[in-house]
Length: 90
View 1 (cartoon, rainbow, N blue to C red):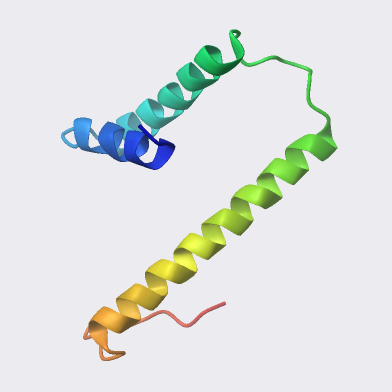
View 2 (view 1 turned 135 degrees about the horizontal axis):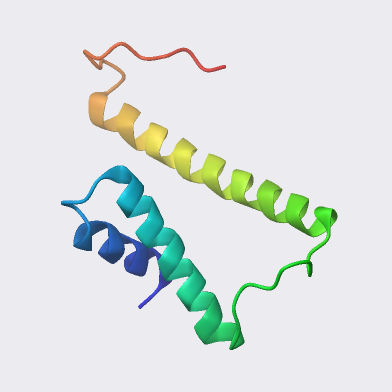
């Protein structure tokens, strides 16, 4: 099962739980994947600040791309005539 489907499954599996529980489940699932893949828990002190910065920037880029896609889909579904007031982009 690919990562996206796994995350969707976790979300659906926990749909009756609160948001914090859903977030915890996603993090736990990701940590368990790391243990399975690398045969160890998350190492402490292994990564440099530069490594972490690169990962954060990558995550921001992936998130921005997904958000742009969702916004485009929403605009297409509403044909730009949403009854809900839209926030102006920053």
